[in-house]
Length: 292
Image 1 (cartoon, helix red, strand yellow):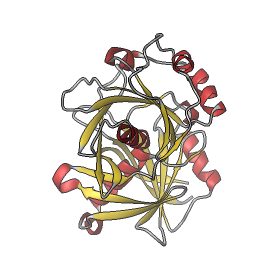
Image 2: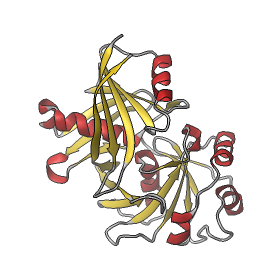
Image 3: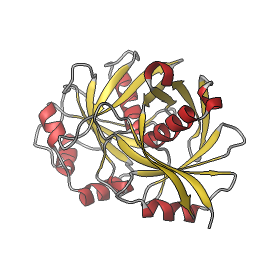
Image 4: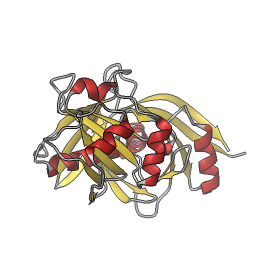
């Protein structure tokens, strides 16, 4: 057996919120096979949303590969926050850097901005956004999401934007409806697979806290679970949506996320050098070794 360093962290925590759990196996030079990584991720089903495998890179400070219990994931925002926040905070050399780079297995190199001393957070450059044609009606989405008729806002557009994961973004008219809907996981998974959708983000411009800009929820049944409690890639797509709709000028904002079954988590968004950044902190829950 080989022994690897292991970390389980919850990303995007704020106050007493539980964040979004991710685990990381630090492989160093001794990379694992895709079959081994998928097996480890499957073992973690129900314990974390995604697994991150952090190894050495020839072109960046590290290389990140992401798996859910179901499949390899193109990009995992909360896993990147959880891994990079801990790496930078605990490594004296990285702690001195303003920017750390991470090579991702499928989305190229991302920059990680170290704001630990000033904001107790790190920020990640979101992959460049791509928008796809919208082919669904409001009635289609209300039916599959088990939303009341007329609950999708007519004042704003639905859009499909990929800023790491292909995200269907749906505006909801009122906060109470947005936080209380819980669709059927298997029905939603079939819809996402049939229509090449990675995740579905619903949002309300109303918030529980006046300090926050908007409230979001993200559903990700394609990856083996119904709801993602705090999301980097989804909120990065949402940031680009806000720009497209003329709702945001790129100044720093906070997005609260989650259904009414949890304390809301917090995802920070801002634009630096014309790039969308998402950020937050993470809280370490388990630290040790993993045997393979």
